[in-house]
Structure formats: structure tokens, C-alpha cells
Image 1: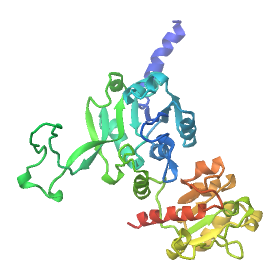
Image 2 (image 1 turned 120 degrees about the vertical axis):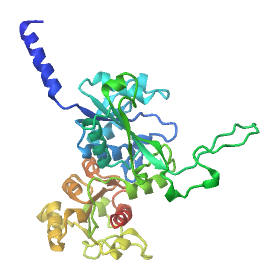
Image 3 (image 1 turned 90 degrees about the vertical axis):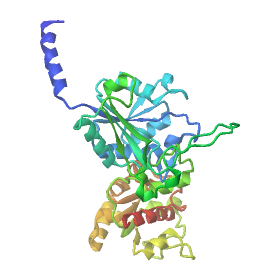
Image 4 (image 1 turned 45 degrees about the vertical axis):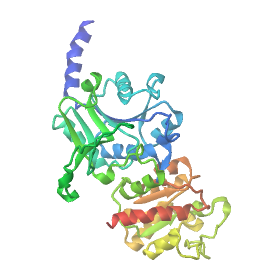
Amino acid sequence: MDSAAASASPVLAAEAAQRPPHMAALVLARGGSKGIPRKNIKRLAGLPLIGWVLRAAIDSKVFQSVWVSTDHDEIEKVAKEFGAQVHRRSAKVSKDSSTSLEAIQEFLCRHNEVDIIGNIQATSPCLHPDDLIKVAKMIREDGYDSVFSVVRRHLFRWSEIKKGVNEVTIPQNLNPAKRPRRQDWVGELYENGSFYFAKKDLIEKGYLQGGKMTYYEMRAEHSVDIDVDIDWPIAEQRVLRYGYFGKELKEVKLLVCSIAVCLTNGHNNGCLSEDQKEIISDDNRGADGIALLKERGVQVRRISEEDCSKMTQRQVVENWRNEMSLSWREVAYLGYEESDVDCLKEAGMSGVPADACAAAQKAAGYICKSNGGCGAIQEFAKYILPLMKTVNL
């Protein structure tokens, strides 16, 4: 080593010692899944499953970097669309028998800048940024080496009897003669698998939990695990009610639809009024999404070709907001094209049809199963309704 390099080394070491520890979020998303094919990117309540936790991790702003470790091209694409960096894991740690610890250790070998790993499970779509913010503080400020998530359960446990054995079962955590009421029993803590935070040196020794160790108790309604809640429709309802949607929601007062959503392939599809501006119900029973929104006092409007010839979509919505004295958080927006992106990003609730352009899909909070002009408006309206109920709880 020459004299210049020798003198520089202590300086670099001192700078490294002074910088805050690099905390990285790492989501493990292998392409294979025994239970549900391509589970990590299967759509759940309008988003790829992995998108829910990536949104929470990025919006928490506690990580210097957010990563997805995968061996799958399509998962890599989705991860990048949600703003994450991608670590292409090796075949060695992509087997059915590979452990999470092995995949994390490989990641750390290639990323020496990382000091703390927040291993977030893709299968926990009700994770909220507030949880991650509190756990980051526990590691950075309170001095814990590892923190993992738990949920409180009120379940009575009994000893298992092997098949063919004539034995009696024994209570494990209760006295049957004095069964407590739920409100009189604090319950027990169980790992819920949502996340595991640990310092680098601990992981390198082969532990995700150890050292000065503690748990973080999550709210029961946020403790949704797709590995357990295999019934996808039930999981979707849990996420629609308790998931994190990117910003604080307010009661929606105005639903705005881009013209392209209504007139895909040049057809009206029976959802526009005679003046081609207002969106009307196309279900005589009055039980469709648009009708229900209108019953709640929500105005439903379409941006027309005439509007777009004079101003941008954002300017049109700004005029309507001012007219109705609304904030952007009280606006729901259904877009389709790149020109809708600004409105999709600003709106309190945003969605796009399944065939919308890539830029619009990336900006939206919900991606419909239906194409534009083929039921997307009704689908988005029905998506909005349970969220509005959540706001009013």
C-alpha cells in the first residue's frame, strides 16, 4: 500500500464509523410456490401481492434501500414497478428446501453496505408503515439486535394424542375448572411471520432472532398471512378493510373517469348520459357500484374530449375540486393513459382498467380485472365502497 492509500484508509474508516447504520428492507420472493402458483405477484385486492408490502416499506421512509430477492423475471419486473431494487438470487438458495436465512446471508455477502436487515414477508399484505417506523426505532435507538412481529391470540391449547394411542389429553394453558372469559385473559403471543429485523453480525452467525431480542406486537386485524389465509377472496376482504392504501383516506365525494376508460374501442357501452359527460347507472336494479356511490352522495363525472381539447386532465379535476370545495383526498380517479398519471398520483383513491398503459398501472392504487369499456367503472366503484365504510368506522 502506498503512503497516500495508507493515509486515506483511516479517513475512510472514520467516515464509515460516523455514518448511520444502513437499514435495508428485504422481501424474499421466489418464483416457485407449492400452494398458489406465482403467489407473490398474484393480484390481491387490485395489486400484486408483493406490492402491498413494498408500498408500506417505501412509504415508511426508514430504509436506506428496499430490495426484492428473486429468481423470477416477472417478479423482478413487478418489484421495479413498485420502486424496489432487485437482487437476483442464485439457484443454490432458490430451491424448495432453501431457508430464508440462507437467502438473506447470500444477499448480505453481495451488499456489504447493509448493516441491518428488515426481512419483510410478501405474504403479509396488511402491513402498515407505522409498524415499520416503530420497529426501526427499536433497532436504531433502543439498542435491540433483533425484533420480530407477533400477534396476540386467545386460544386454549391441549396436548396432542398420537393416533392409535389410548391416552387422555392434558390442558396446556388453562384450568378447565376455571375457564377464563376472553376479556379476563390477556392471551398469548404468537409469531405472525410479518417481519424479522436483525443486525448483520447476528445474521452472519446464523440467527434471525438473538442477541438483545424483543418482539413487536401487531394489531390482530393487520395480522393477515396468505400462507395461512389460503382462501383468496377472504384475504381480499381483509385487505380491503385493513390494508394500507398509500395515504390517509377521506370520504370520497367525487369519482372522475378518463374518457378513454368509457370509450375503449370507440363504444359508449351504455354508461354515459345523453350529453356524454355524466356517467349513469346501467343496472336497472339500482344495485350496481355507480348507483350505490350516488346513493352515498358521490358525484360521478367523465372527462370529455371537449375538456381535453382545452386543458389537461389535472386542470379539469382542479376546476371541479374548486367548484365543489374538495381536497384531492376526496377525489377518486379512474384513468387509462399516461396523461392520467398526475391525477392518479394525487387522488385519494385511484384505479385503472386491466388494459391501461404501464405508466398508469404503476401510478394507480387499484388495477381492475376488467378492461376499459368492459365493466372497469363498475368494478372500481364497488372497490371504493368498502373503503369508504372503513373511513367512517
